[in-house]
Image (cartoon, rainbow, N blue to C red):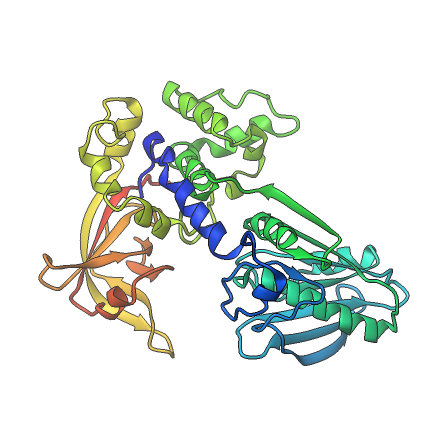
Length: 406
């Protein structure tokens, strides 16, 4: 996985986000609630109201009710929508605390379990908490919100109006905006935060990965400099190339104060390197890796200190699969390889390609992370079923990219 300013400027990002939004977040124009009620496609975007009935999410089923004392005393209601994989959970605080409102956090990748912080936040504000598992767009959020009012009214013996507030950050900001634009009479307020823009995915994440590649070894001293009591000069102790990179990533949107938590900023604990966006890169620019190392205008060929850093850190290595590990569902989870390059960091920044045992027949790209110490490759997300099914002992795994040793 290689980074450069040229990649950051790829216009394909905007098109990808536009497709994502139009597919499941934003309401269609000119579509009535009645027309929306006629669709059983979960990705159909239509205006929904407090009185409309969704044909897909119209059969909520309560699976379990439990009284709990942590993080605050509350009544927990868990359930699902019949015929779908969508689940919901309601966290109802004590009747003495309830003030006629609910809060609902949305995010595309969340599950149906709210955090203790959010449950406590709701209770402290006189509200119960609603949460669904992600991936259903605003229609499932609407259905859960409306059903929660029925459940809460019965539980509290509440005859008045229940006010609802939806909120979400990052990908959840899109979902929040889509929900409030695509509904009427369901929520009374919405708070999208850390609002995404067409260049958010994947540029913001790759800027941070670029910072990690060049500045990881200086991250602590940069963090100390910008922390309270620090020198206030994060550029002290950096060479000219490192100073230029720190200035560039700052101008690209990474606040200097963010280096106080450099482990999070740089994704040091992230198992998949670039925060899960490897397959996004491949889909946007399938020839990028080869172009980077061979074409003018890319850092891989640029005659500069930064270009030299990438070239001296280059890994171009092929290993043979000696063992394939599968789980109880017979899905491949990891591979053991016969040899590894001499580096000390997990190699998740490489572009991996699987070849047949002859070493020349390409099977396809494979995402995951390789630990050179254990010679184990852990399968990542977004891999093609055709590639996974072709994995066997004797196959070859080729990794290409730049990896700096810690």
